[in-house]
Image 1 (tube, one colour):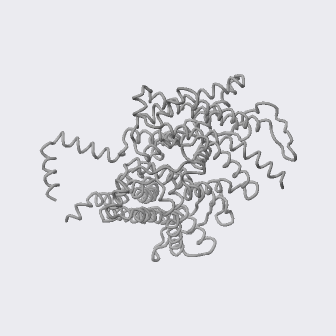
Image 2 (cartoon, rainbow over the protein chains, first blue to last red; image 1 turned 180 degrees about the vertical axis):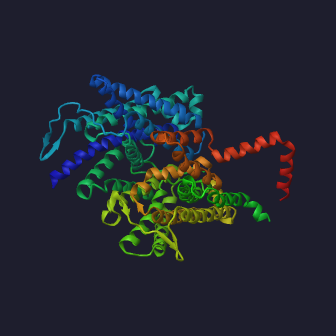
Image 3 (cartoon, chains in turn red, orange; image 1 turned 135 degrees about the vertical axis):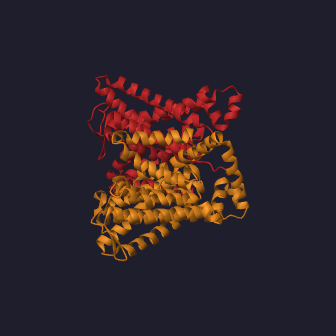
Length: 291
Length: 331
């Protein structure tokens, strides 16, 4: 029993790492522009799908991965430039529908380009399972956890230590004041969307060797990332990371111990309960409502 | 007279709906696609009350449509009930569930409300897929009996057209009247500002929950009819994607316009039918429409067209519109 739980924990932390990266991307965009980006999951899908596609053209594996991440980052720039910026000042509902529209659009484009097939990337290194007690662990699981940890620390460093990171945080506090301080707000928005897409693509590529990918894989991952951000408290980046890991573990435990068919239902029930009982999230600060 | 004038758009539309099958009794677009349009109009008009007028958002409306459909399907095929009481039970069930969840969920706003309704919709869809012994799981349920109204069997496309035309027109009429009633003004006040509405004595929580439950009940009714009309249902018809499609219908026509929602439902049902080549591009185009309307024409296509038409008429016939303005002021 204990070994089984260990196994579920390993699976849960692996999938939770993906949720954490997607949730982190959510939090970055939400902080910078108060937009909840429902197209976040599509970044994950585009990262993984374009890596598969580039690899199929005969490109060396590492190069294909780098280009796939860059392509996705450009999609993030484009999303900001062509969908979010023209609609500045729109209501919350309008922006929600715009990002949903963008998600459906990207998904439709992926369907046209790559079709309905399910793809997988090769493992980064050996596929031989390692044993931890009675539980098994693939080297890819370690890759996922390790790179996620590096990414999270790098994002933290970016916002705490670099001028650009601080400029984005300034935009999050007050865009008007930030632009008076000589910060190019438009550019900072562009960078946040790019960074968020970058994180999504990395998540997609990391998990594609284990979890496969297809044109419609984005929606669910995006919603899970959103759930992670809400669990952790909207707007708190490290909260989103913790929320993602927690969601992954809970999901894996409920799939293993209760029912695999209901695992998504259980995840969303938890999110609903958190929304109703503690809308500020598990780690978020309580904020006052602006009238 | 004033009341008739207020509903002139409704009467014109009713006339069109009645004339179409008389003019084209065997036309596929009238009797087959027309019935589907009927379902979508009922759903979109209900959802528009909640999204357009009350200014809330629901990304899980398909769940109520599905609950109505499954209640009817399960009671008639597994327990041998006749369709009408089954429909009634579905309605009561949806009423109870919607009432139960409305209070806690509608306290949320904006993104949180979007997430909560979306989560609810997905949970309901998963239950439809997983409770195989009741719902038949992903394969769905077949052999759902047709409908009979006082011995009159609704057994042809044309008859279904008649039934759905009546249900659809009744929904539109209800919606138009709700909007112009005290409850409708309360709704719009909630949309403007909840705090301001509260200071004016509007029970905002009650108003929101009332309209949410009403839209849910309409969807349940449409779902029951859908099950009997199709004779077959599966969870795919009630998934997240369909919820989004419904929101698209409301948004496409124009938020806070009943005929905007009607327009959106008609256009979005017809589009894939009209363009056969559309099939591969359906998802792409749906997304593009949703995005570009919200960016460039946030008030919606129908509302935009009507306003544009009025402006054009003013420019072309300045005398006429001045007269219209006078008579408008007089009424």
